Image (cartoon, rainbow, N blue to C red; front, side, top):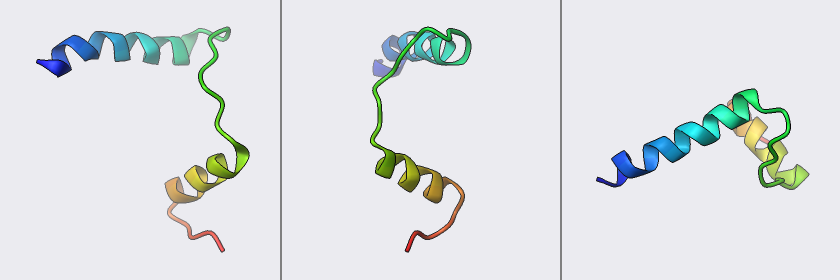
Length: 46
């Protein structure tokens, strides 16, 4: 039940992220961005 009520909201946010250049989401600190990219690329950070 939670999925069916949450999915439309998530879909709208995804649409905004993909197509609306004016929408701003929460900023993430640079070290956290680097950690995410490192993990996404399957590397280890020293």
